[in-house]
Image 1 (tube, rainbow over the protein chains, first blue to last red):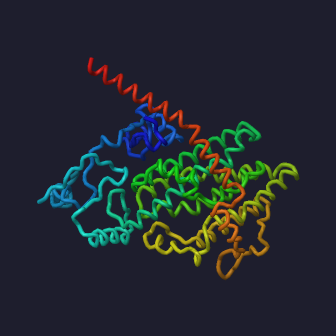
Image 2: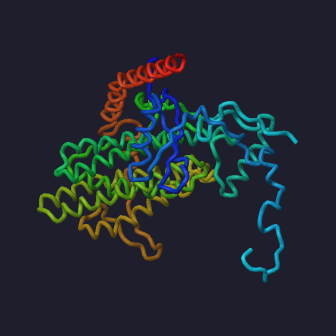
Image 3: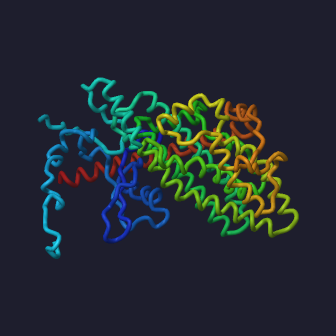
Length: 98
Length: 339
């Protein structure tokens, strides 16, 4: 295989942990020939100014994702369950610590 | 209730993985799209969007990415000749940032279904454009300072509003770019301040660079509004937030006091404060020159594209080697797993 450009390398999604105690957050994507190169490129591309203490690089084609439409019935089960929120419950103002 | 189908290899930020709502008529999709824009929400990669919106974005983002990549050259030429280790390190960091900005933007273009290999080929074949400013030569080290001050200053004027552009990945790329761009502008201005404290010859170099870069910098904002046919549509789609002339005015107003502080003269005898408008009046650059440079006839067009092509072609063996290495490694892992 002879890649015509870096565009022929697999696509990776990059997640960076900004500092200890925080989640890894998606920051963008890049192309790399393999996992090791993906991490090196992710470091050079997304953490040039101390933006992170840990990086995940994940092959984009291994990610399972929900369908794009946000109003999709996929999310409907959570839409009508107001009783899952604390504000659903009426508690008298003079009850402390609740 | 119908359950949303899980898609086979769906990716959050990656090329148009299937068009959503295949069964929905375009008119319904269109009204959802327009509603999203009207509510100032963002369009995301796998949302339905009009073909023209997608095409406009691909063109704009690709040109923007190409500009960052070609933009490495005028200053890159000065890395070996920078007068101190400090200036060399700064220039290295800046040029590396430009490469990074190009890559953020190519990624954003890919989320629209553009092919990165194809974009690179369009650039080195001269089929896709980049900012006209990078077709001017950097004659002295003062040019490095003036590029940071003017060109990155103009880029900031252009890019800050683009952080709120209607297409999500483009806006997010711009947020990253803008965070880094401020260093670019400041290092340039600081470089010039240092030269202005030097000898008469150094001050003359700065003034000469200012004289050469002022008009091309004004052209960076594109043709005047009455000659910019696609602006209105890009504004309606909230891809653009301000017109070319508005951004140009903003740049001039921002730059005039900085020039005074620096002690240089901007080469426009008609540049003056207009109390009534609350803005500076200034002369129009030579639009014919912009047309010539954009259409390929600038001082460095051929050189810039040839350099990019050479870098691409000279990198072919590296790409082959990396692919071979990855293939061998995968094979070894597979053997290991089988054993």
